[in-house]
Length: 354
Image (cartoon, rainbow, N blue to C red):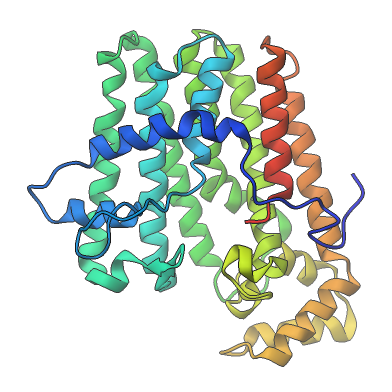
């Protein structure tokens, strides 16, 4: 696929595919049911983080995310001939694990806002936010055990539990790698790809594999969906990194160059560090060794990235992974509708605007 110079040329869209809308009501209700407890205040914190209540615990119009991981799980279950409701506990567990990771990310990155609202630690402090995040992970474990109560045979339920446990351990390992990369200027593309395959890719990979395991007792099919998810993890994160530098502020909530200001070792930065030569290389190293990146520095980095066509290469790389994702499912029997839906979802992840 030819690299594209801007969001418009890439066909960027903020509109979610219909596939998300099909599953969203069931996922949202199941999540609310699991966090309906009122006996301890931390559940108010979790409901706040999910966007269901305000800081005082009063109901408010929901501000829910994309729900990518639970959507992938339910889609895979149906695509292989299973009933989506059987996979609902797994879908909810995936979304809880994802949000557990975000709560901890906010603390580690000292982010005070997410989705236009204060983060948990910014409202209740770090100790309580850590406890709430850990509680959400345990709730996810409890929810997953409902697979057996829903009729899934014990053998496949054990496989499902193992898949999710392995995935969130890998996710935490990826977060550790990301933290260990901070302040370093010797991070290569292989290091970056290994990190995102864990931090971002693990849960996305697990989402499709879980759905396939629950929907059909066929290890070969589950492996195909797992491989698809592994490739989609790269698509998702590379696109995220593109938006972190060049995304539209009104859509993403972040100004152009946001990840440059934060000195994140994202795809654009790692690629620019590897490809730049001479004065450009010296400039990048000087800027990333300073304590604070100012606006002239951001402009300089953007100019260097343009000279080595960072954005075009990033888009081309994500597109190649998108092709791998779809090719992974080529041998899997599924309806024309299901194949069209996974193709549409893959395209969305490649060109999403937020």
